[in-house]
Amino acid sequence: DVQMTQSPSSLSASVGDRVTITCRASQSISNYLNWYQKKPGKAPKLLIYAASTLQSGVPSRFSGSGSGTDFTLTISSLQPEDFATFYCQESYSIPYTFGPGTTLEIK
Amino acid sequence: QVQLQESGPGLVKPSETLSLTCSVSGGSVSSSRYYWSWIRQSPGKGLEWIGYIYYIGSTNYNPSLKSRVTMSVDTSKKQFSLKLTSVTAADTAVYYCARVLKTYDNSGFYTPLFDFWGQGTLVTVSS
Image (cartoon, rainbow over all chains, first blue to last red; front, top):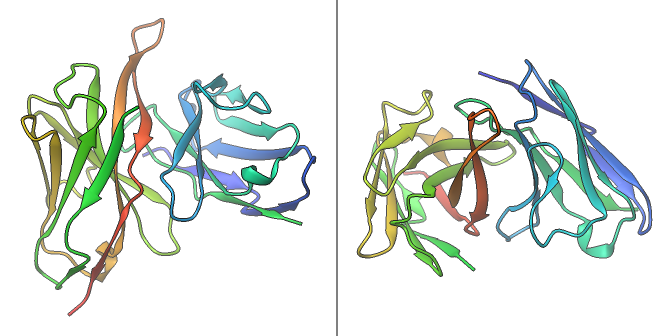
């Protein structure tokens, strides 16, 4: 199985900050990497797929990059509604493993 | 826009079978474009893919759960279901259903896209 790690596990930031979250795969997964946002009591929301393609309706302040084993999610200017937990997921092979999550908190 | 809603008992006894249903609105379960999936998140742990089912009934399961999982689909009711047998406390989790778009990149490589999710339902395994 592909193992996924994320760093940091939690992050405090302020509105307007630029934030970067890192995801690493235990083996090359090309660009088969997705990012999700999860808020308490809400359904997870797909933000980015294929490492860098923005899902329809997702604000352009979100961006993704990377290939192979190392990936990043960047939020260019944090908005109040962005505070949540973010998960990466490999869609390269079963069991489509998720990362452990990064919780973004308001400073 | 498609919406998914999980339903089922919130409490299951150890060794019994967990049964959940996902109802789909705003879209067709019979579409050849999608799989229908279950994912769970145990307290304090990450998300775990359980498996998915196609509208004709074909399935793919997480190998770690395969011996205990059965999924089914009822296209007339626009529902799909999960059964997990012989549950233990380790199966306590929030269970999500999701729609999975079948995508293929330029090289023809298949990759699933979990594009819409339900809000999740907590299932506790306890006597």
